[in-house]
Length: 314
Image (cartoon, rainbow, N blue to C red; front, side, top):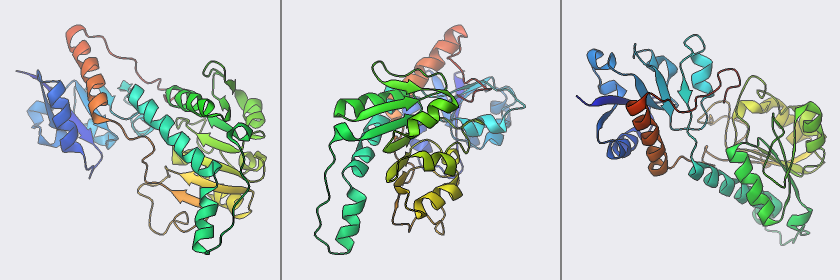
């Protein structure tokens, strides 16, 4: 009898069938199936599951579950709902994901750097008005989060010619790029940042980290890109600082509630660009290969991949 590997996604997730198909292709020795297709007897046999931002309570239907492998890099929802269980969680670490995120950070940094929101507004007003050009070497970009995603983004930004600095819990970053740490380091970074990029994991320490006090320390006319998690930014504070004119534009790919409700203020605000959580979509092909290698190693030897630190949240 082959090992049963259930795939568990959020209710209504559009790509469950595609994930099951690609995982089955790379794990032919196992039976990969959506969890809802399993009988009670089959659920009792499950020891490991592959998940895509599932309802954490669904995992409790698997009484003998030993660990889960996420196909997403962010796993804070799982951790927050399973604190009493202490279930080991492995998050996706895919070089392709880092490359995709770095590409997105560069693209939307260029969007802000080359004043595209302003030119879009001029178009709607039918005004022919060139704006002063600022070279990349004069534009300062600060990245909060210097892990695999942040590090890749910082290196690509630097290669493009921008002044780049980072901030992380440890103060470690890519070689040749200044990286700050601690509260004082955070304050120092934002005071010398024209475009602030958020790539932090959501933890109790980062929730609400970007508030009015921090945003007001940015130079007047600075901009924000949030490719991390919505709850890292105090949303009411963000609106206040944008409305004041201190922040010229915000590119937001993540929100506290997703999908973003139609009545949300973000949709119609002229100084906000709304994206539907698309900055770094997971590549099913490369992710499935990584998941398969990890599962196959565990099935053969019992060696589990590196798991998320339940205290740090990543």
